[in-house]
Image (cartoon, rainbow, N blue to C red; front, side):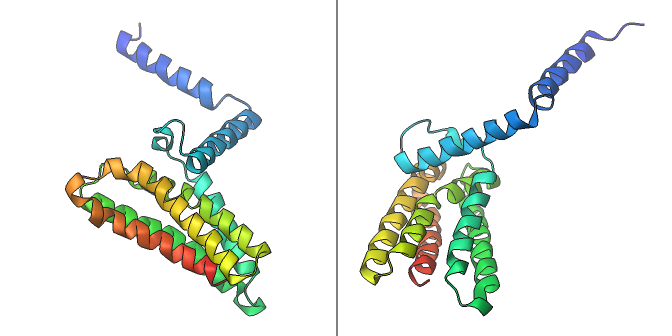
Length: 192
């Protein structure tokens, strides 16, 4: 009894896929993912490189950014409020990214839910850098400048990815919530 030709092809494709991702050592998998995350952070910071880099979405980078920002902001809170601040920042980031994404989808944006959350999360990285600077520079004017630069940088980075995916006649409606999302995070950093 022989195997039909179409089943042989499907079996070969599945074997190739399994060999390329499941049979490699875990150290290679982690190294590949870390390099991918690093390339995405570099793309957000420099604005140059592969414009389709964030089309291959992942949630590891946004999770790292979210956790880092939550830890930074909760570390400066009074002792009894650290858990509340950490949880609040974490929820605001993920819930806010979800709301912005659903808004873009309802307006006819051609973006997947997780791709949009990925872009918004990676684009928070300049605000995390601003939060780190705000730890060392406690003067309100210096902190305001750092946060403002991070805010503008985050907006610019996210608009470069999100703007082409939104219909032209609805760009303002789709991008206004992005502005509010980053403004809210910037405000949290500024008042820490």
